[in-house]
Image (tube, rainbow, N blue to C red; front, side):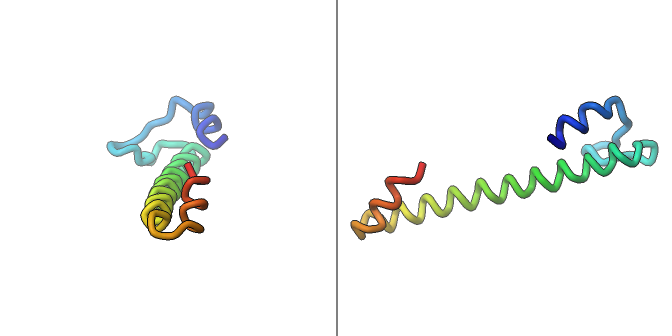
Length: 74
């Protein structure tokens, strides 16, 4: 949803690295910051899911109850 709103604001000037320039409209600058933050949160969530799934798989090899939980996860 935020990405779609940002695409509706184009074209807008940005600096190197995707940072908003001083000429970028306030709404587009706020959307750029929001997209950046949401991307970081998504990266953390995916990493956490990977670590949790791996830990459950390792633990599941030793314990039948954990094994059932680990098999249920992707």
